Amino acid sequence: MVRIVQITDSHMAAEPELVETRRRDLARAVEAANRLSPDLVIHTGDASNTGQPEEYAIVRAEMDRLTAPYVITPGNRDSRPRMREAFGDLGWLPEGDGLLIYSVQSGPVRVISYDSKGPQTNKGWADEERLALLEREITAAEGGPVMIFMHHPPYELTEIPDPFQYADWAHAEALNALVAKHANVELVACGHAHRYIPGRVGNAPAHTLMCNASDLRKGPAKELGDAPVVMVYDFDAEGRLKDARLETFSEDAVAPAAE
Image (cartoon, rainbow, N blue to C red; front, side):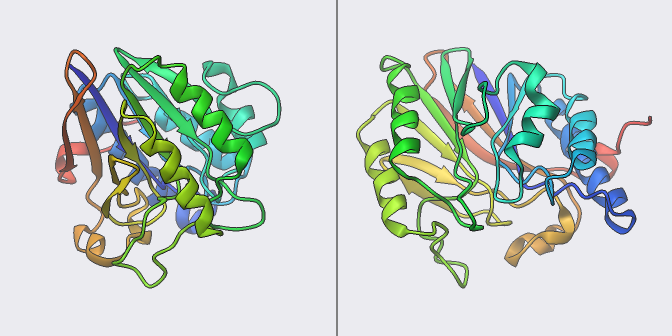
């Protein structure tokens, strides 16, 4: 079995009035993930709130407490150059100064980061260049199981006032069409919505996850208070998705580790 755990939208801030709670929230999520004994942890973007080096330094310090390898995809608030500075030594970010579309292998599952951060917009983007890079990563799996993680969900979020989170909805439709071509895509994991909303991308199940920054949770996610919540994906020995579920932890169960 392969187990992948998702966290998202830590919105790490360095301001004195925010840093304590945002860092605490991420520390609790890390401890929650560790309790689940994952093979890989994915962070689906907006790791940082303003893309500043000091914010990424905090994220790096907390994520390094994970007992499993981890990867991060950029959200609309992230900075690609600063992400490269903070995490480039870990081996999973592509070289150069371009898009952060890359893959790692977790057992039989090829886990692909799709960089949905749009230019001069808080919404998602899926132009021809990105779609070509994504197709290259999927094709490289040679029919083996694939999981895609990205920040912006490319499906209609009917529960929120603005259900279309791509700047040009034709981009989302093109992304769906690409994924639909590949039956080996087992799952698409997203962030950005600050709440849990299931859907589909192509023919694959998809989810958003409530944000790790508890003060920014929206809709029903507010009822969770500051309890850490992660998404757990279990794959069988062949890499087929067997279970996808939310896990919520009590404050006492995941007290942040002492410095």
